Amino acid sequence: MATACDIAMTQERSEIDGSAPVVAVESLRKTFGSHMVLNGISLSVDRGETLAVLGRSGTGKSVLLRLIIGLETPDSGSVCIHGQNIVGLALDRMGEIRKKMGFLFQHAALYDSLTVAENVAFPLIHHRKDMSRFERNERVKQLLSEVGMEGNLDTMPSDISGGMQKRVGLARALALEPEILLLDEPTAGLDPISSGEIDDLILKLQHERRMASIVVTHDLHSARTIANRLALLDQGNVVIEGTFEILQQSDIGFVENFLKLS
Amino acid sequence: MRTARQNLVQTMSNTGFTPVATVNPPLPGRGDVLIDTALNSTMGIIGGFFEWFGNLGIFFWQVLRAAVTPPYEWRELIRQLDEVGSKSFPVVVMAGSAIGVIISLEARYSLSRFGAKSMFPATLVYSVIQVMGPIITGLVVSGRVGAGISAELASMKVTEQIDAIEASAINPYRLLAATRILACILMLPLLTLVSDGCALLMGWFAQTLVEPLSFHQFIQDGFKGATFSSFLPQTFKTAVYGLIIGLIACFQGMRTRGGAEGVGRAATNSVVLASLFVILADVVLVKFILVVFP
Image 1 (cartoon, one colour):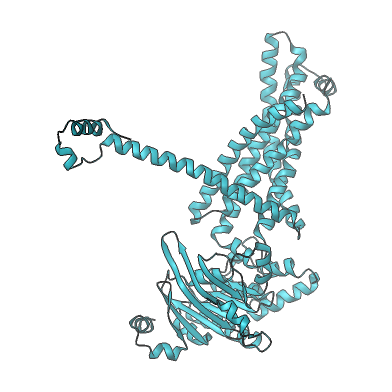
Image 2 (cartoon, chains in turn cyan, blue):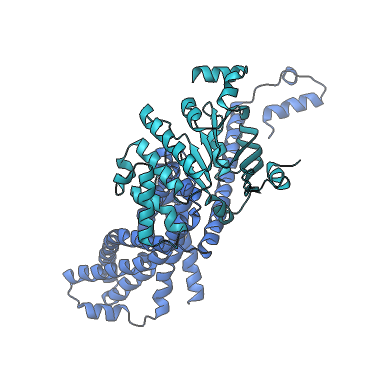
């Protein structure tokens, strides 16, 4: 049976014409102990496209992102980045793939012993050895300015709010100019104004950089604002996938309930 | 395992008598349940022990592979050398000094009883450098540094900071574990020298308060007939303690689960296990040194 990787390769949907799926997961299964989290789901995202993954808590949305960036290993199925299956790759080989990806963690996961500026500089120090210290500092200032945090260069992460931490996390995720952006609950726990600001920021970045993005969220309003397509997960399966209008027209009970209660 | 009651039922069956008990088997007795529980828990402990060692072996292999392949994390290594060395320095100085005074008091009393007071300098020097200095330094550093490394990495693990490092295409085994383990390996012999020095100085000082003895004379008598092989292997064996402390602390820290409680558990387990393995390693290393450097 051909996987999404094979299909992408055989159809020669090259990156050059921009039609190849940048991220494609096929028949992905993941269990923790006896608990089935993902039950053979398949999804793909093209360049410049944003896919929002919605669902109840514990339906495996965050696990899906961790599988895509290789922080978890699936029980079966494939995860293809630019047509290359990354499942089972060695850590250093995986590192080369990860340089093309930016990941915003749910709680930002900033390094608490480093300042805001040092957090953003961290990937640059390790991967852009060609950059001088001056160039790196300028790049950090530019990234923090893009997310509206240019005034907090020397602040420690513990001294800024959750929303500000997410902005810094986003700046860090963008440091290596990724082609793929994975966002885990970017607006969770934020007030409506901060959520709106984060949404605007993501939209602006999408417009400027044309990255392939996957956003995991509970926030239907946010998903509707930033995503081209939405996928609704339930019990480890994709219940429905498509535009917000397609979800609205669905007569599946779970989808109707989810939209009504969100 | 058959119980006495089951044997009785079997015997009665063999004689043609069908006891009611075979139709309605009795619930297991309290003794059976206790034996089953004890067996299960023993098997669980043994299984857990081998699983822990297996995972530690895999972890060590991953760290070793990461450590010998570029890019090398020199900046982080220097930071860790400073962390391990400078932060342990005061504790090692105090522990070494205390050990020197204790050995001095005990040795003077014991040697006086046998009329061998002239042996005091050599007794102190050999006791400190060959026995007490290395093991005390190992135990003090396993408490101070082992707990610190384990708690730091455990905290990073539960707040997804280690995942963030990995997601940034940086090998956490190279950046976090290899640097800390290497720093422990390199710093332990140096800290042992510091501890030995303090112990000898304070041991001499304690002796001088009771019976004046010049420091020059003390050193001359203490090291009379000594060769490098008398002391160097004993000092440099602590590099193995460093490997044990660093490896166990990083391993316990980086596999932590379960929030603040998990962080506390990782730090405690790290100190207990590292101290235990340092003592066990000492047993093996003492024998090894006696064989190789007779």
